[in-house]
Structures are given as C-alpha cells and as structure tokens.
Length: 153
Image 1: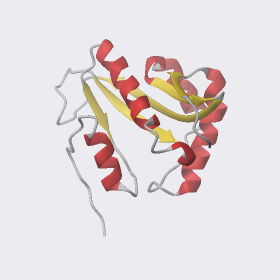
Image 2: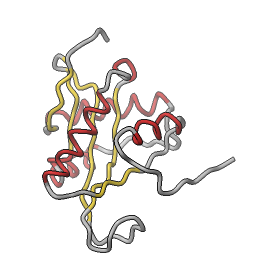
Image 3: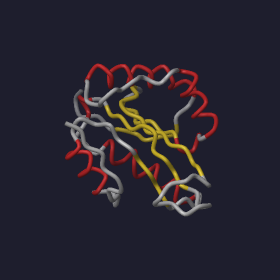
Image 4: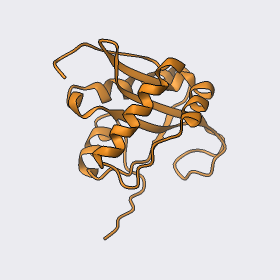
C-alpha cells in the first residue's frame, strides 16, 4: 500500500466485516501461536460493551488495523490491586503492508488516552506472538514492563 494518511477513530458496527477480514489475514500470516479468528458476535458484543476501547485505523476508506480492549475490576491479578479497574488489551493488529509506519503505536496511544480519561491507569496485555523480541520492544516503548513469561521448547 502506498504511503497514505491513516486516521484513528472509534469502531462502528459498519466496520465489523472489515475487522473480520483483518482477523483472517492475521491468521493466514501465521505470526501468532494458536490464533483463532474471533466470531462476529464476540466483536459486536465487545463494541457494544466497550465502545470507547474499540478503535480502527483507516486509510482512504480502508480499515488497515484495529485495537480493542475491555475494562475489569475485582479480578485476581497479581499486578493489579484487588478493586482497581484495569484495561485488558484484547487485540491489536495492523495489516502487514502498512506496518512500521507507527499505526500500531497510534492505535495503542489512543486506547491508552481513552483509559486515562476514564481514570483507568493499569493496563494489561497478553501476547502469543512468534516474534516476542519485537513485541516486547513495541510495548516497552509505550511504558509497559514484563510481568510474567512462559517459555516452551
């Protein structure tokens, strides 16, 4: 994709088909362990429940990436206070042909800004990426610290 201006905005129900297509691309890339595309109903539910935390990246009318998260409290999570609200980043994906142009960073920054405005200061993310070093660098660049690591051989 040629260099295009990318606009970050809230997801709408009209975007769901495009997000489902992005999930199919994500699966075909094979960049995550055991990736399973999310059913339409789950995306619709996430949009209805957490609209402020569901964003898309759009370039010339084409959805090229998305991020979504959900807010929780009272969960038993070691790095979160017992009654502290926290945002869990559920998914972040940017099409391969528009990566390395800060689109993922812009999506993440907007999501973090929404959480901050809502008084949510603790953010959690889990990844099953096959490129752990790159993902760790990405999240560290946004102030995240590793809390738990699970390795396999």
